[in-house]
Length: 419
Image (cartoon, rainbow, N blue to C red; front, side, top):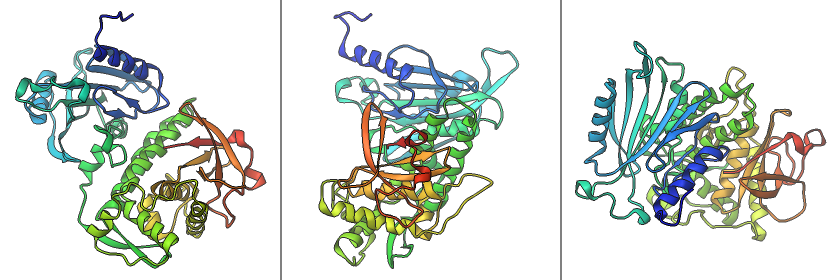
């Protein structure tokens, strides 16, 4: 029990321990250092100093350690120090992640608990901002930034590669990283030059980075490999939520210009697209024209977006994930129900209309959800301690918002997922 003599900083870390140990259905958050981590289900808090260091063990026999270091001269210096301490070997690469210095390293090292055995995994080192409530703690090396060290590892071999990389890619080192591709994807698929690409069936074009579709599909494939571990697990619902959260985060910024063009097209008529710089400048508002859920135009806009995705070519992958990455979906006009539902939700969210998706394992189906006024079928669900009752949107049949087939209307068989 903490007494009244303990500092606010220690109390915050005590709060963090509770979050890490118990609230596993939601991404983890450090109120002191400002980073987020969305661990796969089955990782449980196992050790830590209650201050700057936390360790987790998974049901798969893998581990995840995360720590914050202050007073280190650079991410490269810390990476070398960790390598030496572990007697590890592997490849180390320095890069910039969203304006922050970072290092991604693959490590192979002796298992300290089992003589003659080795472990392997991946480590991420990335600079953090010095939090306001922690000011003055980072000056031991001439004002060097605090560094987040995250290490996902397990038995030697390739069996857990996807899991390790998924864990590290779920990290958002700062608030502004939460809706950007993760640090592993950003390293593996660096942003290319801007190019215009047609938006399926609209006669419009939007700006995308070269490699966006490839990067987005690689993330879908990796996260599907992780999701398959939970097919027979009692935690399958939480695993599904994490799968879609990962895709949403990776796709949101990739689709920003496309969502802006579509909003302008469906709300103010034809839009004469300008340069990439001009269009991105128009996105200085987080959500274009900011229709908002209370606007009379919001439901009309949402219906036009729904009409559009309902016209996509239906596509399934019986050998893997049905999910078509959202960059390809918006460019080519194709995808299964969950691809369409999430694309619709992102377009609405970027127009300041609160949105989500609902999925059903029993029905093998997905639909969109939106906080819109007016009549229609609503799906009541609870997520993150909040109650929702949003309008449903069927994305594969030509029907209006708020209509749902009787054969899929049993609400107990649906899972609501917010972002």
